Amino acid sequence: MSEHSQQATAAGVSPFRGDGTPAALAALVPEGGPWELEIGFGKGRYLLARAAAEPGRRFLGIEVAGEYFRLAAGRLARRRLANVALLRGDALALLSTRLPPRFAAAVHVYFPDPWPKKRHRKRRLFSTAALDLVLGALAPGGVLSFATDFVAYGEEVAALLAAEPAVELERLAGGWPEGPRTNYEAKYVVAGRPIVRLRARVAGDGLGVRTGARDDLTIAVTARRTSGAEATAQPDGMGRFAMTLPPGSRQ
Image (cartoon, rainbow, N blue to C red; front, side, top):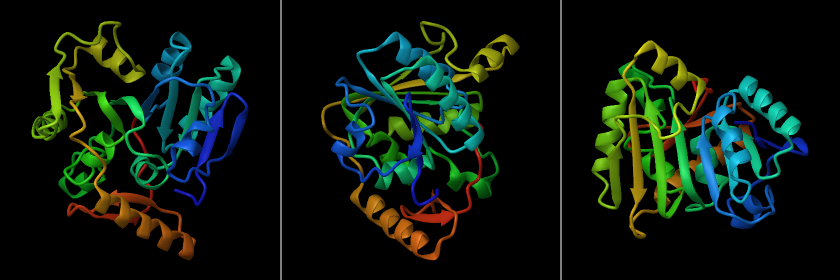
């Protein structure tokens, strides 16, 4: 993640200077309405279609891959959707230091990179160390929607969510009511590949962002800015975050 992540709205692309406050987030889309967040929006199929269908809601997308960010930013500008903002950067770093906690009524994560090799699993978006950062973006009563074709990873995510006392977990065996939500999902449905789909609701106010994780990552980002290294934040498996080279994206 560079010192200033990029943002894209219908007005164009510019540096994102979010400071973790609700006011900085609201400046991206000044019109009111609840926020929805998609992490790893890829080419923007689901995010942009949903934003067009729900003009009374605000949508934020995060994507680490520059090629996909630029593609979706171009589509956003052509469609002139005033209720969407896109961010390019590492999702865990942005959630930890640049976005406020509990801002989203819904979080969407579809077909994230499963990092199947054991030595790479610390890079997963969903891990014991990073789970609080993802769920911590949800407001009380908010809903996380998740899908993956990597069944083993899906079962691990299901187990992590089921272990959270404030989460109500539901499996969607028959797919989403409106059909496939992403290009990957549409392709996998045609191919007959098994897909794990989960919906998790945060009940009450029992979940929040873990302060220690946010503090550790803030220190790491500050150190990276001082050195000038190009890096992203990754959990180290012990509840802390370290800066590493960006691994890329599959979404």
